[in-house]
Structure formats: C-alpha cells, structure tokens
Length: 335
Figure 1 (cartoon, rainbow, N blue to C red):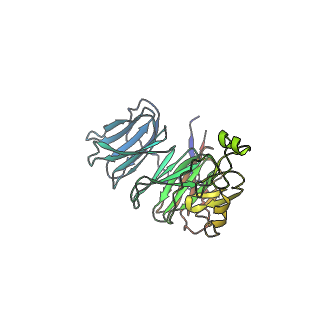
Figure 2: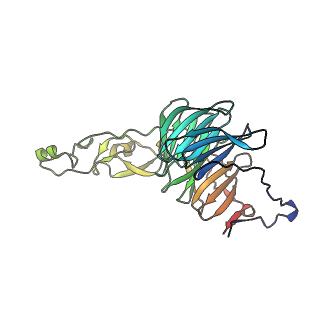
Figure 3: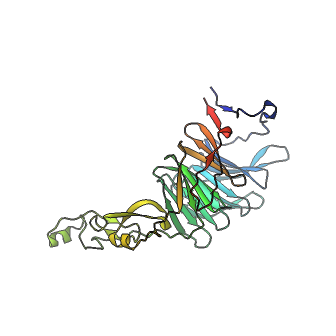
C-alpha cells in the first residue's frame, strides 16, 4: 500500500487543499539522491547515482531542461547550494567534497577545490565561509574555507553515523542528528581549536618505553614492547601507563571523554572541560533534517517512517532547553 500522510486532527476539511502537480523532471539513469530548488531562478539542482550533477532550468515552454550536466568521478550522494555566492558543494560516495562556482546564467559550473571526508550531509555558513559535513564515522568536519583555507575542525559527540546537519545562522548553531537517536546542538559562536596531528614514534614520548614493533630496542632493553596510543590533546605517541585518564576537550570538538596523557589531564581545567554543545533524545533514528529558522521549527525524518516537527528548535547557545515537540504538527507516514 502506498504511503499516506495523516493530517492533524484539528485541521478543518475546508483548509485542506490537494497539492497540484505542475511539472515533472526526468532524465537521470539511476537513483536521484537529492534535489534542491534554486531560490533566485526557476530551476532545480539534482545529484544522482548515475554520477551526474545537473542544473535544470524552466524554459518558455514550461518544461525543465538541463543547462548543466556535469559528470562526477563517482555517485553524488548530496549537494548544498548558496544562491548569494553561487557556491555548489557536492558530496561523493567515495568521501570527497567538491566545491564548484556556478555561473550567473546557470549554464556552467567551474571546479574550485576538493575536500576529503566521509559525507552524508552538508551545511553552509555563508557569513564565515564554513562548510559542515556529516560523516559515517560518527564525526562532523568543519571546513574553514574562508579565513584559513584548508583548516578543518572536528566535532565529536555522536556514537553512530551522523546522517544530517543543518545550520542556524541567526544563533550560530549547528544541529546534527543520526543513527544514535541524538540531536546535538553545537555552539559555533565560540573559538575552536584544530585537533593536532598524531606524532609518529617507535617509543613512548613520555616514558621512552618501546612499542611492540620496535624489536631492536626491546632486545637492547630486555623488555616487552607496549601498545601505542595517542593523546587527543597534544597528539603525542604514548603508552597506556602514561595515559590512564580520559577527559572531554570541547574546544577541539570532543564532547565525550577521550584518551589524554597524564600531563594534559593535569593541565586541563574545569573551564577547559565546559561543554560547547547540548544533546537531546530524538526517540528516533534520524535520516534527514530541515530547519526553518524564522519560525524556529525543525523537521526530522526518521527510519521509523515518522516525520516530526519540533518547535523552539533553535535555542540560545548557552541554554540547555531541548526542542519542544508539537504533537498537533506530527505528519505520520504509514504503509
């Protein structure tokens, strides 16, 4: 049986109007993963498993015809477009984010640069030129494309795949959700620090114990090698004995406790551990979100085939209030 949308019980029949089909766009040879309407032009941008990204413009005949058909290196899983700057970001299945500049007449898209990451969803901060990408490896990457090109900040707070991200420019908050049934609200109006590169060493950089692959030093010291770990705060290669503590590091995006060396654990203060994000139970595994910042409403699509509309979803960055669900605004898809 086809899916049905159950209207709110309080809605009068007189206010119900059947949606009218005004056009259909066909032409992709494989699944279409995402489609968005261009705000300042009668057009649509689509991404498909057939490896193409297409821009469709409405012609005088009333039909949509492709003005751009760009072939990617692999299937395009998601797209994000900013009408003001005409920047188009395409997330590919191989973990690459491609940035394009779309021409004023929508007849050409020029490749700018690529970014690496396991991409499921994209969001864009136009004011500060920050690109947010949701990843299957439970992390969110913040790409600083504006002021410091190439800089990437990580946000670690989920414990399963991050399926969707949306950005609220008015409050400078990033909202993320995924398979762990958690809605995270990240304060992006704070100074964040890039995670350090992990050091390479054959010995613990704290106590000089050899790691288990350092056979020569193990023989000379007449000892058994130890397993290598890394401090998430300083990036040094350390052993388990020198990293017996864990700590949150919100400035680096770690909102849950991670391994740190004993020295860094002593150096981190309670102020350094103060959270920069709040987490709320969505009671569903979220696959997609859409945000209306003006009306402060957040729409979530779940794997349980339930679409929820949450009110007051954009809260003060310092507030700990969870989004309030409007029971009379639930759209339930039943099969």
